[in-house]
Amino acid sequence: MVQSGVHPDEEIRLPGRPGFGDAIAGKKAVTGMKKQADAKKVLITGGLGFIGSSIARRCVSEGRQVTLVDACLEPYGWNLFNIRDISEKVRFVRGDVRDPDLMDALVSGSDVVFHMAAQVGREISMENPRLDAEINCIGTLNVLEAARKSLKPPVVVFAGSRGQTGEPDVLPVDESHPDRPTDIYGINKLAAEKYLFLYQQVYGIPVVSLRLNNVYGPRCQMHAGFYGILNWFMANAMTGKPVTVYGQGLQTRDYVYIDDVVEAFFLAAFNEKAFGQMFYVGSGVETVFLDMARQVVRAVGKGQIVHVPFPEQREKIDIKRFVVNTVKFRTATGWQARTGLEEGVARTAGYYRQWLEHYLNRGKT
Image (spheres, rainbow, N blue to C red):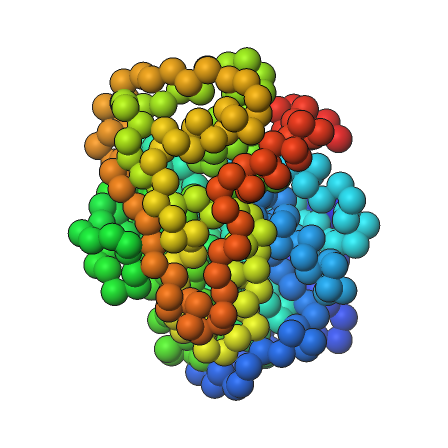
């Protein structure tokens, strides 16, 4: 069910709930564990994107009432094809987290908010820092303000980023590592995370931040290389374009499969031990970038890897090595990544062999 251009006081306002002016402000206590069975109403910002739509599918499978909101901005990863087979089981609102009235309307009555909407391009953040701040900072504040106004504040689970950390001092990185972001994106995501914890401290809103590493898998965008690089390489290999690796390709990353990430979000949302905490989410395996590219080519069965010089701007903000320690999250929730890179890349290739055209030609479902 699709709604677009909806006035927040009309179609979206939930029957029987008080108006926005009646919401109780001030500090509220976080009371116990959010029981999975009780958390029926779920809002997902950025809900047509890679991770958001994957979370939506899990929610639908568990019988939850799901609302997706997505601004459908270019050049990002929204895709109606991602919800093609659950579209009648979710409500989709085309709207922007930068709209505070809309966030008030949608957050009110929700039990859990998975806040995925973001400006995710590191180079875009350097070229257009105002846009990045508006979406990543103001958008997050709008979600948190809406939660504060709610009679019963929802759990807010935030999609953080390894970009908040910067170049590591030691590996693997854990939650005690200092934060020194190397770009505007990382700075603004860090600011958004700090807003999150302030709103829990002052207003009692239960929040969790999951700092994600390089997530890959089915339903990621395939039309641009500024994020989701593994999927971008796969698209190029499948369509006969070169798989371009900057420099020698010896930088390292921590690649984590989408199914493991969805499980992480669910465990964070429904476990009070996670509330008020930041956790790293990754495989815990340090993979050389060039080895990842070779794995993609093997899984696709074709493709040519081409080495090209680093663009000057990209090299200045690039992180040389990164891998995380997830012991803190595992201790709190029992989560661990279960899908190895070879298996995950093979699954991803299988998905796009069937559906690639719907990601290269977005919107043609």
